Image (cartoon, rainbow, N blue to C red):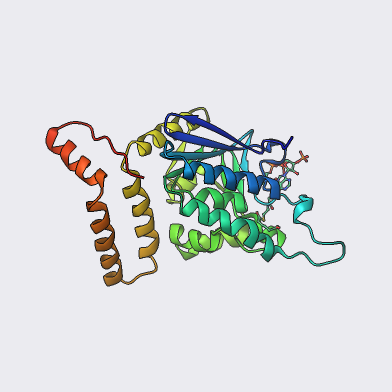
Length: 264
Ligand code: T3D
């Protein structure tokens, strides 16, 4: 029987996906990639799911590529085609996270290194345990940041800090990551999962389509000029304004009651 390399658990409208290779700090193998993508697709396709948490089993979040994974190696003697690994696994993962129809919260329970760091940073909100740290480990093995790192890091931090972290591969503690705006929140280790669940539950009760459209608008705006961004805002508002959630939000405001959002 195939090993459960990604555990899936639902609590109300929140689906928690746990990377489950703790002995290797949840580093990515081809098999774990396949299970993670399947679990994300299942959450995306389930109308009962309105927020997703990703986290790691054991003391680490994810140490990036499993550097011992035989699935990733090339035929004996051939130079490895790491570009193919990125195309086959990391690009689809990064794009899947960014196109999820529900918000995704990363609960970073321990070290997040290499592609593991950028997998977390690609999520919509990142909550990290105080003992966790983020490491752009790529330069230490002769690679560049992948899994979206080259796009995400300068946007989140500016060029100087992005380049500094990527060149040195130094560990950035969670507290510092919060201070410089790389992540949403750093919390005490014991409070991590409760904090992530409270945040995901709060997001799950909000108008999902508006949340994911907000992600799309912000990501798109960084590549648009001002007039184009305004045009995109108008087009998205036009669509959202015709949807149930907007009517419900306004009605709830007028009736002084809690809104019951349902669009996805
Ligand atoms: O094909 C491709 O390569 C393309 C894709 C590239 C994307 C990438 O992610 S490249 C970056 C790959 N990741 C790394 O280079 C990180 C390697 N790991 C580390 O530097 C350290 O393990 C950490 C800084 C993350 C944590 O250090 P520490 O001291 O807390 O733990 P440790 O003792 O090093 O690791 C614990 C165990 O996990 C250990 O196994 P053992 O000796 O107890 O049996 C270690 O070998 C294993 N482990 C950690 N990271 C990986 C790993 N095993 C395989 N691959 C790993 N990446």
